[in-house]
Length: 95
Image 1 (tube, rainbow, N blue to C red):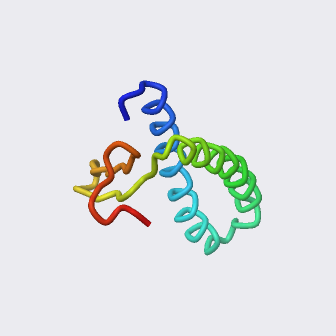
Image 2 (image 1 turned 90 degrees about the horizontal axis):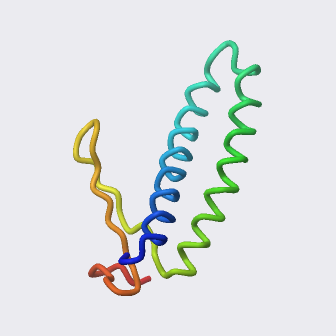
């Protein structure tokens, strides 16, 4: 990703990816709460809004031939992110 615009697109996608994963885990926890009927519609709307941005972002990256290959958790605060691009494909990254 030598292009600053590509890096910006990927950064936006990565933030949306983390938000989607977080909402999915929150959804399963909130379903078990007594007040879930009040919170689930809010989470559902938020998930749909973020989901649309996520899929648009993912399609834009696909046009640029960029994709998230792997996220490897290092500890509670850090993760390594592996990115496959048209210029630099990782071994076994070709589908």
